[in-house]
Picture 1 (spheres, rainbow over the protein chains, first blue to last red):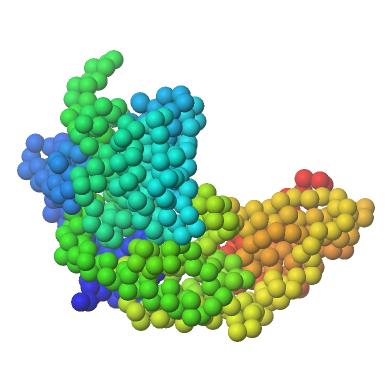
Picture 2 (cartoon, helix red, strand yellow):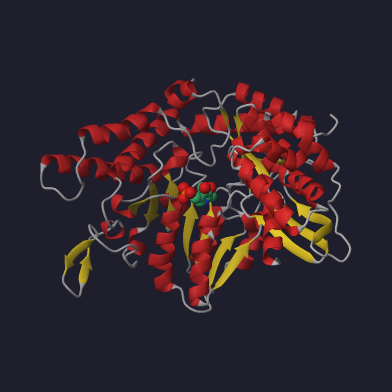
Length: 402
Length: 143
Ligand SMILES: Cc1ncc(COP(=O)(O)O)c(C=O)c1O
């Protein structure tokens, strides 16, 4: 199957794009959807009583329903549109956390978290004099059962963890974590930024209380993200941003708030991008997660095998390529990751270098920074081979004998 | 110069076999310089005889460009007085920001002028600047 033809960027650009964990590329249908919204349906959604506004509103609310079905939510009212994962987690930390966390409570995360799933909890813990507790993985990236049992206990009120690590690519045992947290009476937020693009998620089956992801990593537009919250929990949450669209009735002194989930969507919403996201969901469903996972594993295997054959390369995380979800984090012996990335850029190969917004994990792994190649289903084995070929010359460029 | 030649012709030599990447004895000034986003992290040490930089060294880690640039800088500034060292730093910063320099100014920068083309690589400008920026800060503070 050739899905490459659907992506205008590959016609306009010869780069080998291997930074998909940072943001994916978008198919033409998503780009057109955003543009069509403005060309044919644009008005301020939720405000006007005229046809055009109702059309805009319908596009937006249909997108919400699409997301709800996509995640296996019970109802569209459990879906809050945000700008991205970061905003979703901040919303959860404020609207739920600030209301229910008390002095001495534990907030449990892992040392693998992206800064976006760390800093909101760090602030909350500081403000409330609560404890921020870190689950730690083994060297292969796996968080084991006794770690879960040791860290999640009676004091735990919130657990927030990535389904898939953006550095190691490993999928965390979130079913076990959710089960343990619920036994202890805690609520669980799953950061799905890296999982949703690569595997089918069903929030009901997982029994997740909250689930956050970004549109832009799964071929949607850059300006839209999602926070799923179970209805029973959303009902107890206080508003996040205050202003227009999120109210029911306002006087000089008081306000009552709109019904769920609008209470959490203050101001004019990003209807065009929400619509774009719904088209990205259609596209992902058309491609199918079976195909995506198969390609992920195939390409990851090719990268890891190639690196091992090359020598002088350390690959971080699990030895099994199928546990990487398309993400390969590595270092070239003697060469700083920034030099690796700059030199590959000379050959038109795009990879990421740095701390990947996960500095505590870098400290835990005792590396200053790393390089990361991340694939998606539209990448090809030819691209991987070109990357490997260029990578094999990096040490020579940096003055090492081959 | 394209990036790969830059490494081969100048950066590698100073990165792999630096002349000044070591602590010096009894430094008068020590300052840490960091690029938080890339993790370049050096500690620059200067020793003075009167107003003149008599010895200098650095320790730390970072990409080849940050390390090589710091090493080249130290080559350049040993023997200069504070004012001359600051003037060099300013010249280097101008060059790396892509401003046009005269022949004479290039000569003044010596080997450091070979890093000129980094001005076309926005992602690497900070790396090349690190040593120079740190030196400038130390000298200005103690002037
Ligand atoms: C695991 C994880 N969480 C959160 C984020 C933050 O996503 P965004 O920048 O879209 O808010 C990212 C992406 O960078 C991520 O990989």
